[in-house]
Image 1: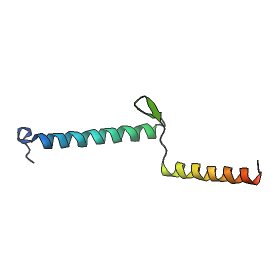
Image 2 (image 1 turned 45 degrees about the vertical axis):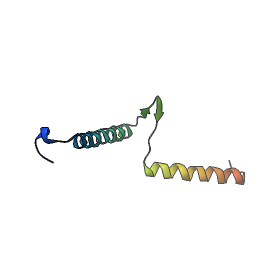
Image 3 (image 1 turned 120 degrees about the horizontal axis):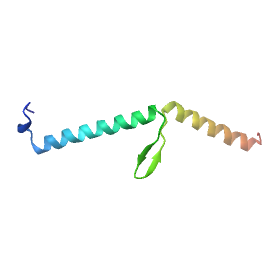
Image 4 (image 1 turned 180 degrees about the vertical axis):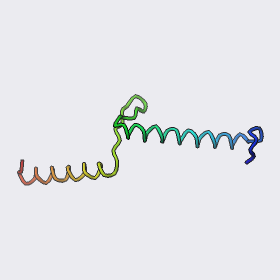
Length: 73
């Protein structure tokens, strides 16, 4: 790829645009996670959590199910 923008092919321009768009989207999602806000996609809100929080939620669900089966409040 040349340093001169006029030497870029349509495919190279498309590829660079896609890469820039993916990075911008990833940065936005990461920022929303860091500030504790949801991401809005097609009118729906999606709350994000990291792997640690996801594991905690899974373990809490398992514990709740076990307690319910054992009759423990």
